[in-house]
Amino acid sequence: IAGITQAPTSQILAAGRRMTLRCTQDMRHNAMYWYRQDLGLGLRLIHYSNTAGTTGKGEVPDGYSVSRANTDDFPLTLASAVPSQTSVYFCASSKAGGEDTQYFGPGTRLTVL
Amino acid sequence: GQNIDQPTEMTATEGAIVQINCTYQTSGFNGLFWYQQHAGEAPTFLSYNVLDGLEEKGRFSSFLSRSKGYSYLLLKELQMKDSASYLCASLDSNYQLIWGAGTKLIIKP
Image 1 (cartoon, each protein chain N blue to C red):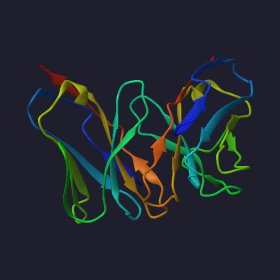
Image 2: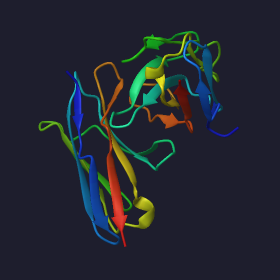
Image 3: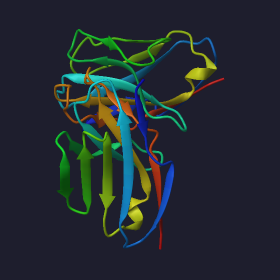
């Protein structure tokens, strides 16, 4: 693994289903982030984690949950997917948060029908 | 509220120079980032400015005026591979990035 990986690459999901998007980094970065990107809008922060064991809410956290059991992994869970959660989801990481550069994974394209 | 404004789309000619502007209004300010994003790919870091002035990095330069809430990205000697979206993002008082919608740059031969 080099950098950040995300899985799956894309997914079509029925409304009401539970879904976990996976994110793993091998850079030993402390901070990790989940964003969604929608056409015509800027990236919006869903949840973040400044270090293993801690998480925080971003701009659009409703309907999503995260956990940070270790440094490398930061999964994003949609407990009961709705069509408005159709989006491209990017995971990112930075060395220590703050002004440190964020590095992005390749993204997951999620469609909720 | 927090707001980042940048043009939706720009067109330029291969070999030319283009300037992409960004204005920001955020609660607190801890710096301004520019990212490049090719279609279907992840954003990649280009520059970070926290002090006023111009920072040059090869063909790309980024400028910041904190008093005006304004930044621009200058791309010189444009190449076809520079066709991409350019994202402006301001780091607010909580050290969270507030992103603009991006400027799609189309390069014509």
